[in-house]
Length: 317
Image (cartoon, rainbow, N blue to C red; front, top):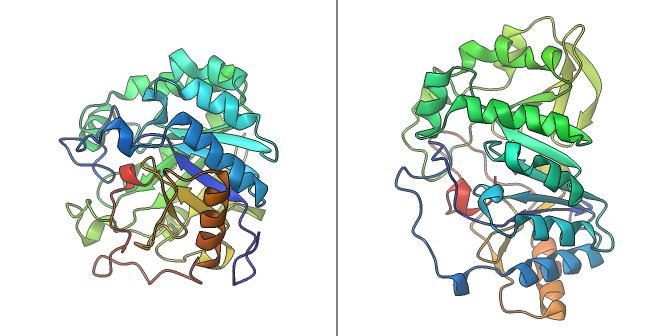
């Protein structure tokens, strides 16, 4: 289905939980979240009905997110059922990777085709600092497990943070020489909940090109990422610039939160409730959300923060 600006909306990001086993500083508060009752959250059946309704309107790509989706006890059932929905061609998952050593083979068997792993540093002390409670070796073991499980594609997502990990750009990009992975650098977005980051933290993706002048530009994009490559690399370096060069004109996605609210734009407070609706009601509400998708969000900066009204763990990373 197309929105009012001619964009084909074919991508749904489904958050299955707001909870996480880490406490990344740009994503969620140190104390975690105010836990909601089960009655306030989407059930597995409601999630599947929403995926079916979206698929009936032309959505064919599904990304399962959180919070951390792998802490969800029924995550394998969710993936298995989602991959069987008529019209869904691609099921992906975004994870911090720490639980992949136990779950990677089962996720692949359940129909997950692609995995994105969040990894912001290769320094154990800095990893503990940015995640507050995590251990780098767990994430790296998750990367190895994902590669061994045979997913069609493994990508690493790194949030660029000035003064924290910009000195590691060459080392992180070098992972594309060591492994058959894409390394994607993503600009830190000024969201609610990450006010602890000062202006110096918000650096553009162009700094990656400055640090790595040997990068060769690719001939295509991968979704919202502009692709580059290091000589001899097995994978690509991707740059995602939601702040310095927004891609609203090509945005093809909707986001469904774990508590059942559909967001046509990440940086808008506009939401459409799906919880409690039947299939026809969900389908109508999804249509309404698609037609309400704005042409673009307002420019983002340290002084002009996102209007989304939620921290990222409550939206879906």
